[in-house]
Image (tube, rainbow, N blue to C red; front, side, top):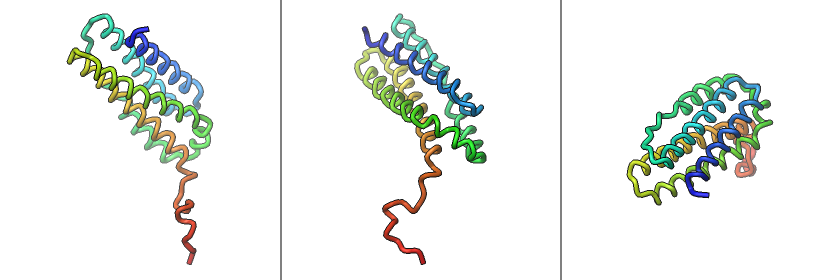
Length: 161
């Protein structure tokens, strides 16, 4: 399997994973984010396919990060959603690993590529994958936030007044 086939398969798997997360959630805002992430993965698939076929395809910028910012504003106001999100915590962690691996993969592909145009596109995909990672990282952290508070172990030696 050549590297472009592998990249296309990876993007297709990512798309299917985000579509599954979208189906599994009952939170409308999360469903929207996962659907947008799946659309981005499809866009990456089509871009990689165009590169493989020797076409110079321009890639539109992703808007998923801006949409996610709006989602987090809503989530901060409705903390009852956190219990629903906890059911997907392992899924968020898995998505973080996938996105992290994707960033490394595209950065390595860019290092091996000779065409400056292709390098630029691969680095743009890597940057979009970083945005995807940040979204999933924030979802993960937000879901765990109620468990994280100041009275952790490093503060256990402080006495209350």
